[in-house]
Length: 112
Image 1 (cartoon, rainbow, N blue to C red):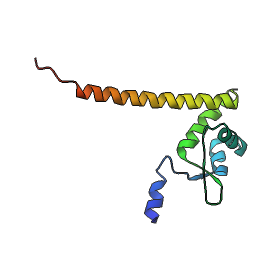
Image 2: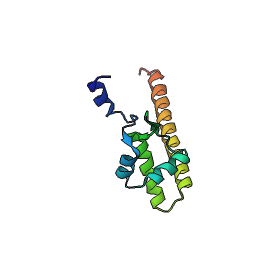
Image 3: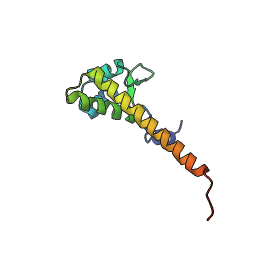
Image 4: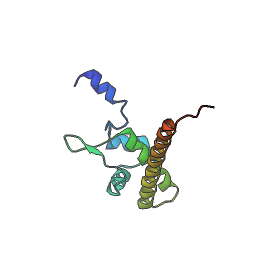
């Protein structure tokens, strides 16, 4: 991998660029919180060769949403479930929009 390849990966939302300590710092939370949402299977961090947890920007956004709910008083397990359901709903809506666009593109136009 060249240096150019490494830098381009930093723009990738799924690239595990953040250590647990840095992720916790960015989220304003504890490493224990990150472990807890991992145990609840909200996010599964990748592991470095040394076995350390690494988080992507996408995972940090998910963790931030869970933290927002927990800060509002939602138990962590419930917060994780809510975030999972929100993510599934967003994906289903995206797929439905794609189907609607494809169906509209296939409709024959009527000449008047």
